[in-house]
Length: 90
Image (cartoon, rainbow, N blue to C red; front, side, top):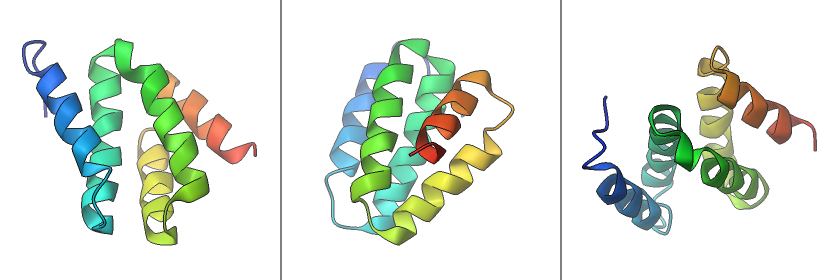
């Protein structure tokens, strides 16, 4: 899904809120959409990387599994390759 420049801040705010809920499905969805946001709007790349690094340490195993799947699917994207490397080097 294409995220318009005029909507990117609203999307970011929604995703941040979704990361704070208890529902693991919603959290996993939000991490997925953060990756989409960062691929389309490079100014979010570093922040997304940081969110994913923290998530791989602190989130439930089911959310971590979803993040690993997101990274595998995004492996053709250079930015996501870097994130994948960071997440798997620790």
